[in-house]
Length: 163
Image (cartoon, rainbow, N blue to C red; front, side):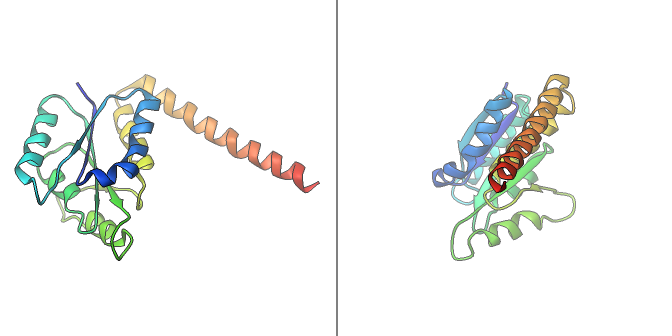
């Protein structure tokens, strides 16, 4: 059983969504990845969502650019948490996708990360799963400690450079 489903409207979105995959791998969270369009393959998308939920999936990360309907369509088809990743593309450089994803109607929420923010999408999915997984919760705390240590090391190196 895969815990996280990652779906994107086009294979050109993979270079962004790969950041979520890297996070899931780092934390040992199982996942599956699909290309399926809210517009061009609607029935396929809905069938995948239903199947993923039915096999015990826990969270879906949906990436889309421009009109960015995919996260909303996915959220409308499941009660699983959906994380939307707006993809930078088109004339508006992803702002249109951000607005489309974040402005869901009441009753159909989509958690939304920043433009091209698939890494944070992956981390948010891990946090959601960690609510019922103590080992994952500990791993997240360790991850945060490591991040803080990295900042402190960079500051120390800068201070040395300034002497």
